[in-house]
Each structure stands twice: as C-alpha cells, then as structure tokens.
Length: 407
Image (cartoon, rainbow, N blue to C red):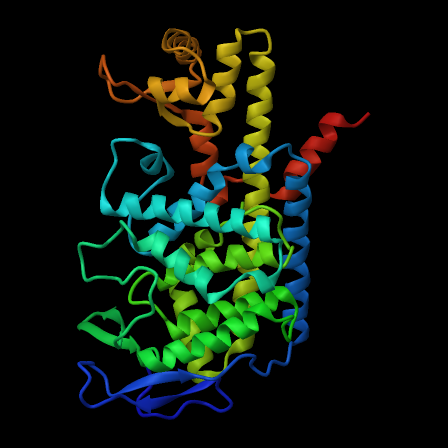
C-alpha cells in the first residue's frame, strides 16, 4: 500500500481517511470507482482475448460431444475446490474431499465449495444462461454455502451477510507483517455492491471475458464479506462463464492458475488500484483463462481415454464390474458400501467386483484393515493430480488422436 493518499491518475479509485474511532491498524481505506472503468483495449489485449476465447471454445466444443459431461467429468468441480482451497493456504486434496472419515475444517470448507458451485450452476441452468440471472443475492447464497460449516469456530464470518466492520489484508515481510490493503469501509462496500450487481447484470461495456476480469477485480477490491471473498470471487468467474454462454458446464478451474501465480495475481490487483495497470491485469487474467481451458481440455481427454480403455478391457465382464468401472470415474475414492450405492448392486456383488478390479491393479486398498476398507482408483487420481508440466498440450493430444484414426 502506497504511502499517503495519492494514487496514479486515472486510477479506478482513491484512498480516503479511515474513521478515527475504528479499530483499524491503518489510517486509510481504498474507495473504488463505480463500474465500468474506462479501458483502452490494446492490440496485445485483443490478441490475448482471442486466444483465450479460442481455447475456451475448443473446451466447450469438446465437452458438448460427451454424453452427460457433468457426471463424466464431475471430478473437475472437486479439482476447482481443491485448488481454490490451496490458494487459501491449505493442503486439501480431491482424495481428502471424497474420504468419508475426513472431517477437518479445511475439508468441510472445500466440500462446501463443491456444493456451492454445483447448486449455483444448476440454478443458472434452470433459470437460463444470462448475466441478468446472476445477482448479489446469489453471491450471498454462495457465501452462506461456503461458510456455513467451514471456519465457523474462528471469528463469526456472518454467512450470507455483508460485513459490518473494517477488514484489512496483511502481508508477510522479512521483518514482520504489514498492512497491504484496506478495502472500503462497510457501508461504502455495501453501496458499491449495488453498482457491481447493476454492471454484472448488464450487457457490459466490453466483451464478456474482459468484463469477467473487471468484475473479478472489483469484487476482490470491495471485499464485501468478512471472510471467503477470494472463494466467492473465484466461484463467480465460473458462473460468469456459464451466464455468458462461453461454457455450458462448470468444468473449469482458474484457481489452479491463481495458486501457481499467487504473488503476481495479488500484485497486479493492487497495481490496478494504485497505478491503473488494467492492461497488465487483463493480460494476466486472459493468459490464465487460456492456460486453464487448455489444461481442462487435456485432463478431460486423458480421463475419457482412460475410461474408454477400461470399458474395452471389461466389455465382457459381469455387469457389476462394468458398473464399478463407471463409478470410479465419479468417485475414485470409496468404501464397499459406497460402491454398492453408486452401482445399485448388493454388497456381495460389489465386493466381488472390487476384488476383480483390485487383483487387476485398477484400484488399491488404502487402509490395510480387514473391515471398513477404503479403495482408490490410482490412474484416475493420477490424471487429476499430474502437474501442469506432465500434461500433454491439446495440440499433442489432437494430433495423437488423428494419427490413430487416420488412414
């Protein structure tokens, strides 16, 4: 946070003195301007926008060819929850969320994220994909779902309500901690969210993908809630992609890119506020949209190819085995009783199917116990957990597919 109250003109806001009676370890807060900002989209931004839209279009086209992609690739919602949770500094994994005996605050919070995204996407699908169908009440509902049983043994996060006090963001330095940024005081934040909703629901001043980057900056700058602002802001990116008909399914996870580039992400948000660095922020944001669309395409292709190989291998197996093969792509960490629920088979039939897949090395028992055994599908989880560097590019996978099907 810059010294004094001055910011570079024409920055999209200004610093104002904080109330002297407030228990705030800083003398000022940031007041963002109303939306939309005045942007001059450079040739670089226009090119980055085109590349991002190309990658998102390729992902959406691929997903549209899959029967019931929300079920076939539903683990992507867990991947977004995992990565969003890790942005907050936890080590929660997809496996943790699927394990029935895992019940830490961080795991509950990540599961809340999955539920919140799935419910919001379903509601948007029912009401129709349109920016008009997203509202501040939806954001409050998201927040309530996120915070309801997450970190509620800390200071009350007021689930589903705007904050009623100052908050501030700190950063670690070699010699201690210091205040990095102070969002607007609560009554101003509430008012700014009215303008936020108005712009979110409008046709927008810029292409939808640019508007999503602008709206994400604005909600992170306003910080309307006591806690969970980052998670709400990241959920909003996915919902805006759906509302703008850029994607038809919520199988996209920008949180992975933000986690990998967290310092650049926070530095650029602050640089917009203080130095009007919209171009740098938009280039960063659009690069992330392109990279994550490419990553989602490649992971989806790898998962579906793995499922096809398994289905071919077990095409003549008993129905319980074939159904269990389908189930491990929905929940790759499971108990015998959960597998019986997923396949709608008896416990003995499920046990027998599990024995077959375990002996074939498709699944592995992880507890070492005789009772309450838990299994995981190693190759399925491996596709989800591969580092970005290990994943082939979409171009490589498409070329490989064409060479296999060509003359």
